[in-house]
Image 1 (tube, helix red, strand yellow):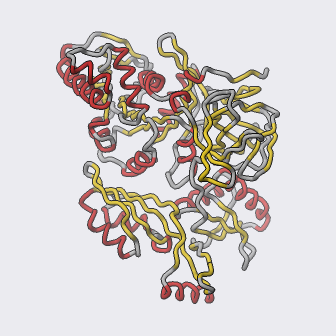
Image 2: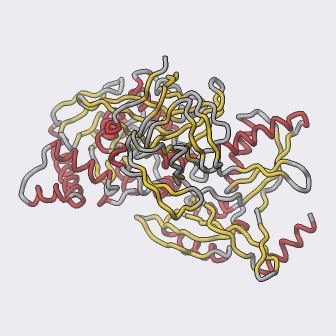
Amino acid sequence: MVTNMAPDPAGIRTLAIFGDLGHDEVVTTSAHILSLTAGTPVPVTGGRIRPSVTGQWAVGSTNHTLNVIDGIAPIDFADFDLALGAADGAVMVVNGATTETPLQRQLMWWRSDGKPRICFVNNVDCHGTDSFSHVRSIVPDSKSLVMQVPIGRGTDFKGVVDLVTMKALMWSADGTHDVVELPGTEVEAAEEARSELLDNVANLDQATLELVMEGQKPTEEQLYAAIRRVTIDNGAVPVFFGGMSANTGVRPLLDAVARYLPSPLDVGTVRGSTVGDLSQIIERKPFDGEPLAALVYRYLADPQFGELTFVRVFSGRLEAGAEVLNPAKDAPERVGKIYRLRAGGGHEEVASVGVGGIAAISGLRRVRSGETLCDVAAPIVLKAVDFPPPVLQIAVEPESGGDQDRLAAALQSLAKEDPYCHVLPSEKTGRLVLAGTTELHLEVLLHWIRTEFKIAATAGKPQVCYRESTREGSPVLEEPIMTVEIAAPEEYRGNLVSNIAAMRGIIMSDESLSDCTRLIAHVPQAELFDYVNTLKSRTMGRGCYSASFSSYKEVPQDIAQQIIESRRGQ
């Protein structure tokens, strides 16, 4: 049976979930969220959940549609940026059991700045957990709205105090909770924490400030509304706590998602540009009556449904069988079947999807992640991420000559799924060349070729993608310059700054946040080979970085001559 997918946009919450890489509880928390919204357990396969699913959640008598997008990916990959681009808000899952703050978390937090966010600290029931230190490490105290106080620590974690209702939520073995009056031992700490919460909200919300100045205490509903306002304005980050046991703390988290993260109507007008001129801005309002504007944020080769294209609709309605425009290709596309993937597994074929909806589409052959689908009569280009040119390339060949066609098909599939991945023919050898953005990016792509596609493949050494241009009639060699963002403990700042200078880098930004230093620099890609190990050695393994393409610039003449001579030798 084909149905229409037309929930009230005011009740839709589209969120990306991300968190500490290598932290299995990020996936587990995602699975718990989906299990509760689906009413049935959600399987975790190969360390992943389904990439984009829809479930339901009620707060009181109000039902909400939750669209959950898996954003668990390294920030070198398009998946992370596209998940944020398709979502209206985000939940960052923090592993409360670690003794130190993973600095990769800092990079993710900075990258997601601009999205309304909720922080969920889990594993609070592990021995030695210091829940609040993890919050302070990424969220400034003035923007941190600690919504709960844990009752007990480590293995004695029994529940939380809800600082809005001033009731205790005491966990049950199945992850549900009983709402009870505050234990006498928790009253003093709870009152102090609630006072701090009210102060932080009042500092960010004028209506709450006026109540406080008049000597009044906001009601529960007034406080809920104020926290929602400052969260959507990106001024505050509500913080919640949970444990590693099944669903512990996830129900209050889902209530918070519904209460505090924005609907498509809260996000409001989406901005795009005209085809061929990114400076000409076009706006679309989040209504079904507007022309269609949808973002393609993921491609997936599904063993059951074949090639699926995941889209988020920002305006208008996407109809099965309709002709739409892909402005990136300046070509029409015929929409095939549209599926809603259920949180608990399975799928539902729908006739259309409206504002705020996410869905998987079959039958689109020429569309890549990051591109736009729009009304043929009203073209628009939605900008989710900047698609960088390839800056590193590596020759790839199968160990068995009989796998050549399979390897070519695998590379093309990867390139369609990941817009940061490119497949180039080698002019000299005829071998396939895989190109991407960083060494990590290429390493992971090669890993997928060997594990997901089951192809035994060998690869050469990564090479910089130089290019030639002409200036004043003379040929010039240009090299890719990368924007490098580094997070490390403050004590290593001087060492890192001098190292960047030695790599022909230029510091663009230098700031201290808590006990962490954040450096942003422009560095030639040629100087970044094996930088992950250089950074480890200079920070005792406590630093991390990300790199993204900035621009091409002329190579200094002496270095250019060395590169040219090296190429001749090859």
